[in-house]
Amino acid sequence: MRAPRRSRAIAPLPDLIAEYAFLVDQGIDPAVMQGACEEGAARGVSPHMILLHAGHLSATRYLDLLHVRLAAPSARVEGGITEVVDVWSATPAEVAKDVVAIRARGNAALLLMPQQIDWSEPPEVRRLRADRAANGLLRRQPDMSAGAAFATWQVLMAPTLPGLVLGGLLVAPDTALAALGALMALPFLLIVGLRVLAVVIILRRPRQRHLPRVPDAELPVYSIIVPLFREAEVVPGLVSSLRGLDYPPGKLDVLLVIESVDKETEAALRRLSLPTYMRVVVVPDVPPRTKPKALNYALGLARGEFVVVYDAEDDPEPDQLRRAQAAFRSGPADLMCVQGRLALYNARPGWIARQFMLEYAALFDAMLPALERLGVPIPLGGTSNHFPRAVIEQLGGWDAYNVTEDADIGIRIARAGGRVRVLDSTTFEEAPERFAVWLPQRTRWMKGFMQTWLVHMRNPGQLFREAGLKGFVAFNALLGGIVLSALIHPIFLAVLIWELAAGLALVPPDTALGGAMFALALFNLLAGYASAVVLAVIAALRRDIGWLIPNLLLVPVYWLMISLAAYRAALQLVTQPYLWEKTEHRARHSVGARSGGRAGNEPKLRA
Image 1 (spheres, rainbow, N blue to C red):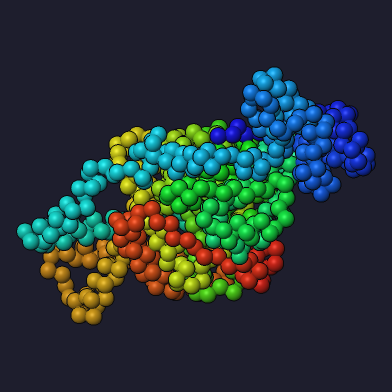
Image 2: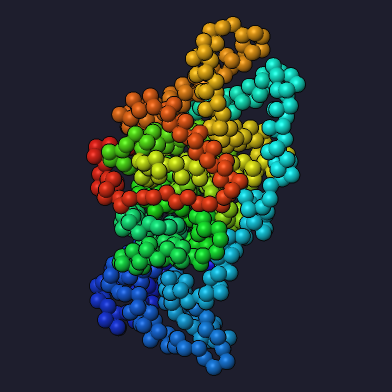
């Protein structure tokens, strides 16, 4: 794994001008060089980065001039080996020191840009790196990976619970039904309780204070990792968005990560004129073919002190990296992650996309800030997660076998004693508009929640000790409650409809216990809808998408769709646990990205 390039003090302006004088001698305009040195001194980056980004100097030309300046032949010397020197991340003086040290060892120095370094690695080295990316966490901490066998009690639970239910119904049907009803009601109650707390917290939440802008010279090197798979159509919009980030280009390290089998996306990237700080990283086809495996692979090649994950269709607000840095600087010592808010940019969304937009508003603008305020584990969103690189390495990277690696790593942060802060900055995404696109995505989410619950409940006692009572209850309420409520919801609804149709709902129950269970089920159903609607309404008004509120009338239909995805996920958990169903995205111009407008429906977050 490559060491990150630490932010360092740039030499005084006269020293910079002297250090880069060889470029003027080789034809660079003195005024241009002077301007690059002045800008580099102000921003805390090397002048050659300014020249390369502005197009005054090509990477090939800079390498040639360095070879001449340092007399560093690229051919291997007799009896020695070739050692690579990264000339993007180091000043000419630092490169010269590396070359002298390499030659003192009897070896040859090969001056390369980061992308060339990636390509120069032998295939066997890349495959070994890919194997570590896929199986590193599984080997080092098997209890934390969905790739390991589950606990014995979990394996036994699957056949035992149905057996107990069937036996209870045969022996004592009234008691068994009451116990089963109470058990089924619990996840609904937990979810309703969390939503009510979120409503109270968001209504009482003080306005977030504006954090001061971090000076350019103090900003660290930031690695942006963007996993891509079959995304040829959207990469132009993605690159455009990343170009628009308000961050010194010399301190950006953008890794566009593709699978080796994805020739279409690779060709689309090759056709683009990528800036020097962007590079294409090709991951060897080592199973499982998942996003977290690609993230782990790219992390080993990243240069930054900080890392953020974006998706192919993402359009982050330009100052998000700066805001994240300000949050880390002002936050507590145990702040391990900053989560950006996610919203959706579909200009004329269909009804599924409208439900999705309301769901995102409730989650990222209400529920996650409430979980932050409560100090309980936060399952992260799949994108816009900002980390100090050391945190990811300390946690062992992402779990390549968990199809919601984001939720999993949020729980692992809590177990490690860390905190997550929700950032007042938005990343815009595309909402799925067709059922055929929505269902595989939601199936993957539900399957990942199941995996995450099973992983962290392998040893409930250890989870309790590490997360505490509050964290233990919140984890089970959130992930366990989401899954169980989705599985149980259609059963509740079917029973209620049957009793209403048969006229049994108006008949006095045979027993007080039966009446209590029916009342509890009805309360859960109504309270579940009501709490979800109220939370969505508040979040929608704060996001200025109040025009979507009438669509909440279709929440019962949407919840049945989620239940279908949950049952499909349960089947996949047994038959295809590591299958990553790809979400299709369209070219950004067709849905109205931030750069192109949102047809008057742009969702801004109201303070």
